[in-house]
Length: 157
Image (cartoon, rainbow, N blue to C red; front, top):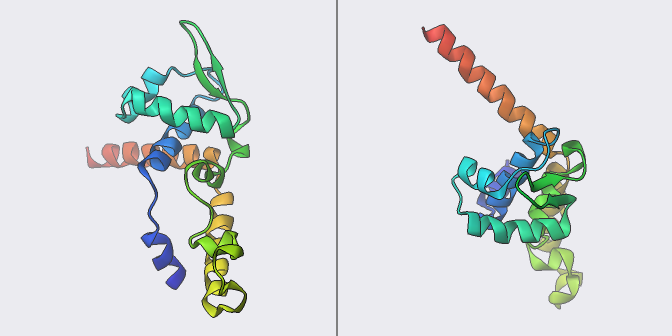
């Protein structure tokens, strides 16, 4: 129960949230080829200029390819099942809930700190959970939800 409370209190930046949404759009279009930045911006309701900044960071850290020209855009260079949510989050977020988790040298008390063990354990649980979720999983969840909503509409009629 306490782990859930900690996860819910984590703050994730807007760049991270938008970056994940952008990656899901690329995953949805994996077999269809490159997706134009303008199409992603329109679909997600995000400024194209801001998405450009986000894509610059994503492209430098994750398997994304770009194609120039009128039918150009961005696409995943690996199958969506190979890219984890954690890898996307790590592009924008510093690792560890508390700085001493990833760098014990930042705190002179870390070697004798009783609470550090708790932060390390929580960080491992969160990282493992996010590593277990892939872009393919997110695409699948979205497809399942859309089918469920369509079925609910049919039933109501």
